[in-house]
Image (cartoon, rainbow, N blue to C red; front, side, top):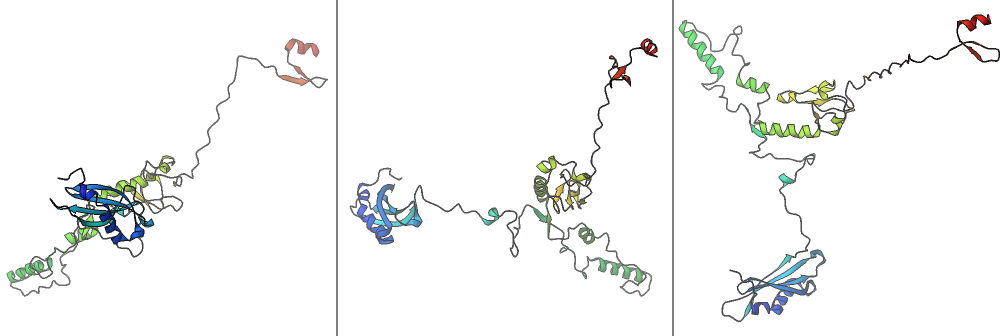
Length: 307
């Protein structure tokens, strides 16, 4: 168990520790004594300032020790250690965690781990039987044809005649896997599919500011190119060169101002119908008077008197 109180003889061995530090680093690199710390029973570490400009805040640590019932202090080790205010390099992070989208350049190789959760084994056809094996389709067809010929007591070649259709490749596991794009060593797993969908929706989805201000969504845009697979229900590819998402996978709920139907301008609003006040009579001039003014219609009696 380490003792909190430094050993007296070890704590007083400052000159021995200083001489060891000067011998290891040189007199111009060792500064003043900064203190001592007990590392255990009769084990003390002395700290000296480091004068090297490249190691600001670092300290020379010289550890001395004394054997039990001995009065002679001996040197243990001398090392340069960082202090509380030392400038240190950032914590090392593996390259797989430092890698960010867009870091891969021409000629760079990005190996994929064997247990990558984004991938799962696909159908590569490697487990198919060899062409001449008993389990192969060609061998089975030849064997059946030979048995049929033997039953009919006829000599029939194992090779099917030109007029007789051979075994069809359509409907086989290999053909179906190749049509579905699964004839690969590994294919995208459900986890990889979901992470890709979340990433695409975050970049070009309904919650982006561009989509919030768009006149309509990509689902009704003529520049949307559908994709194959289950993702076609939620994503497509933008083919509008003026769109900020040109050539990108966009969510069907995404949208921008370059929508194909944005050119159809909305109809101008109709003005409100005029309001007629029928409770008030307004006099209207009938003919101008001699003074350049106008004579108002004051009634039929006055109009007859003037005539």
